[in-house]
Every structure is written in C-alpha cells, then in structure tokens.
Image (cartoon, rainbow, N blue to C red):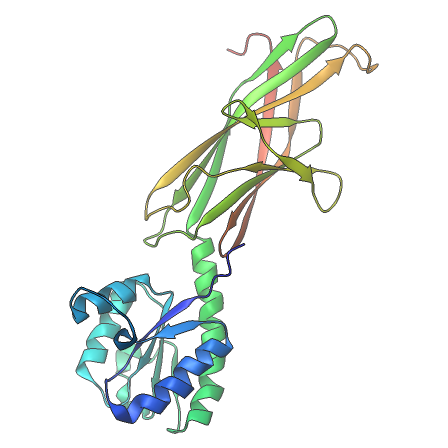
Length: 282
C-alpha cells in the first residue's frame, strides 16, 4: 500500500520573526506526526502566487494558520479555506487575534515559545489527521446490484451464474484517495471473473472464506464521479457425485463483504445478496 502522508498547507505572514516558529514549531511538529507541512514560498510553480495559494488550499488535507498579528492576507486565505470546507488549525500568541466567529474552530494559543507551541500543536495535528482520514473514507459510496441467476443443467451437474454490478461513487467535493484494489469475500466454491478472466483469489485470515481480487477500472474518482465494475459469479449447485438433492430451482443468499483498498485505508461494506437460479430467469 502507498506510504501516504497527509499534506498540511501552512498560512502565515512572510516575516523573519516567524522563521523559527515555522521551521521548528510547525514544520518539525508536523513531521513528528508523519505530516508534510509546507508554505507556498518553499514550492516551485509557474502560476501567480495567489493562484498557487488557492490551488494548495484546495489540494491540502488540512490547513495550519498562524493568526498572530491579524495579518489580512492570512485572514483572507483562512476564509477561503473555510469556504472550501477545509479543516483548519488556527494558532496564535494572542487569543484576541482569532475573530469571534472563528473561535469555535480548532485553535491553539501559545506563549510565543517553540516548546509551548509543539506541546499544544501536536495533539491538534493528530486530531486533524484522524478527522481527515475519516472524511476521505467517506468520499466513496458503494452500492451493488445482482442480476437474475441463470441455471445451466446437464446430466452430471447444475451450475448457477449471475452478474454483480458494483458502483463506486464519490459523493463528496474532494477527490477520492487512490483506489488500489477491490476485494470480494466469498466461499471457496464461487469462481469470480471480469471480462472473461478469472479473478485471482486466496484464503482470507479466517480460512473459511476467500478474497477475490478485482482491479479497479479507475484509480481515482473526481468529485461526483463514479465508476462501475461488473463481476461474473459462478458455482456448481448440484453434482451427480455429490449426493445432494437435484432441484429445478436454487436460491443462494447471504452477506457479501466488499472491500475497497485505497492509498489511505480500506473501506469495508457488507451487502445482503439473494439470487434465484432458474433455466429461464425472466
């Protein structure tokens, strides 16, 4: 899985008086929590600095803003970040620097020392990481639809098959994390295929089920975008040598677990499936 580190975009005055606060109080603290923190003046870009700030606010996982001194540019950029729905950690050496209508947002008031800032900012960064992870996991909505089952009967066996359509939709205003794999857990007697090719599989950690691997057709979903995977299921429902009762119709039902493995974690969904297998499924 990708070694992903959240990106915190730092908004603060370009004043040498804040150099150590940034390097050792903010950036180093972020690194201690496996977060990449950068200011715009550390980056290379071709657009105007304002366009870059807007782009980095939108691309960031969350914002850390130094509000000390009531810098108008920082205030404006924080307002833009809030309008974009970004989580923000506001830090200041004076509580009066945080406007009344922003005091309910996550903020840190420190005494001006790097030691005090690191001690107070660390837990906020950890919380922001956790909240960001939750939000990103909520970007992908999974729904499934099973077709009618088809029954292929011969003198020696009855084989059932159906198609499962898995819809992945990004209902959020953010790009989804990278989709690395889709796993569908089934009993060992099911064979899954996509586009005529059998899916790789191996036993799960319990040993009672197997995980079938489906490669996503799209790696990332833009806001409001969707992708669709069609998976063919087949299994032997009756065999002349099994000693089981031969039937004209069969029903297979139970809970199916679908796991979406992303660059930032795995989304697990349990869905109820019931399929009737008949020679004439209509």
